[in-house]
Image (cartoon, rainbow, N blue to C red):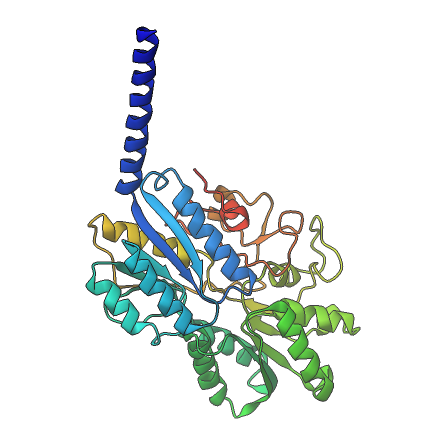
Length: 373
């Protein structure tokens, strides 16, 4: 009996030791928070999944304890959450900011307590913050210039903008308007806020077309929704070769529609098919959140990290659009940039998921949050 009790004691001791070791291991991990604001579209969902996949990769899974909170499009709520994250012992906070300035005081307070703050896609103006994002002014400039040239400098244009108050929307709109202002024969005949949502874009375009029929529209500049605009024209009986040129984001559906109409694509149907639609598909790449995660960990590890990491909009044209047969990391590395509908069933899904700088993440990271390793 004594022997049994001794063994029980040994077992209990081992259990306590394992529990203590586990707690110590958890304590050794960097506590990193993701603070999301607006989450109403495919891009935000993909970006969050790619960030979570980074945290789950072999490189980081034993190093980081990632926690996620969503504030919605409410600056005050995001401020409150950031303050609470600091109080809870955050080592780093990764932020999709609802505003470039509204969070500054909370971010400065976090920095003063030694917390690393990294913003992705949207900008935080506070000097202590790190930022990584696509050059959104360049995005607006490149897309507007392409459309102006495609229209030979004249015609009626419809603008569909993004989420008001974000730096992304502000910079894109400013750049596009500066470009259009250089062409006196280009008229912006209608404008609406599309909230970076295909559903909202369709609603707003329906309102516009009620007073400005397709016959009076020569081109479209859409922060998100070229896919929807192309589909609406096809549904209205407009032939594929008469669909108005559209400059916009990197939705998979847009790029499928940009393929030559004769292209055979497995799974293509309805308006999710090659049309030869004239388009420029630039992109807020989907991986800035994952990039921000890497920057945060590198900074915590004592490595040199740039205060600002700018990413290219990576515009895709009718000449450069290329189908991915499998979606493997190696295939994307070779230059494909749009996925078969058999791989991506949702045409509103954003296709720019590849960067050579983040081998931990690829297609499956954006789809289901699964890392490459």
